[in-house]
Length: 366
Image (cartoon, rainbow, N blue to C red; front, side):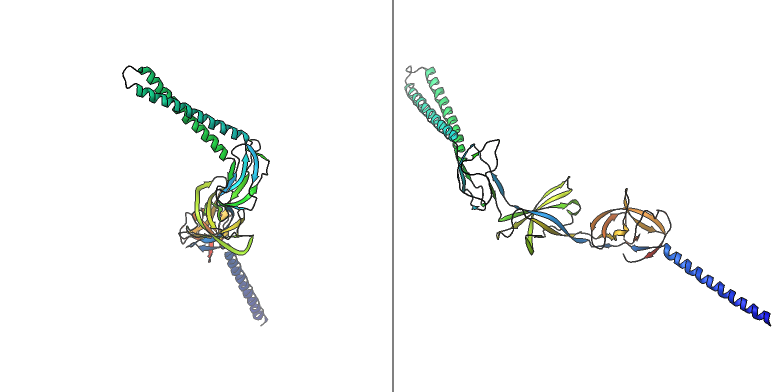
């Protein structure tokens, strides 16, 4: 009786042991299978857009540095920094005795040339009248009189031109505003010598602050992604809790090879004077692709020294697909490459996953 009981006990424990081993083996295989399965997602297209902030600078619409055109001394200064001026308003008066002397000399030469011309003209007219009677005046004498009259006529024209030049130099002694604006810089006082080539510096700087240029350098990657015609929103630290809008006026139509950017210029009507030329601002663009693009998690793009790629799974095999990155967004990055909608990509790309190897995937949402 004891042997059957012992035998039954042994069989029971043996069965229990084998069952436990089988369950552990199944659990280990399941765990191993889970470890081998890589997270992946189905590639699909979507709208691409983001808010892009770039530094910008406000500049006056017009700015002129007033230099002395002739060498002389400052006699009067009519304005100072901060003064509003009108177009043509006198800013300073210079004096140059040498220029005045040259102008007086040129005027005298003009009068002398005119007197000579009037005399030769009168002589030619008298000889022409006398030559109507045959044999009274020799033909050669009449020709000489005519030539002298023409030479004196050319001399008076030359003297008049020289006088106009020196008169223009006299006008340069009065410095006038080229346009309506504000004096932002003054470097002279009465008695200063100006117009000297060794010390020539602007007498005044005139700027137009009522209308401002907003210049921003747009990176090459975004120049075709900013909708045309939309006003630009910008802010400045000088005016807190307020944003402004400017309209696009012109583009440089050239990528600067040093910065890989294109210069865009906007215009802002600053009649209130709230903003000042020279302020730095932050411009905000709303980027948007015209067509939908592929967007993947940042971790899906693997980067090495030689390439950027994503890992595609096709028929259970690994493929490396080279890509270029586009617009970066909060939840992913735009990519371009030999990809199709519906491709299976690994959520985490790595060069440790060799091309051509077999792999198990666990499809999830990106």
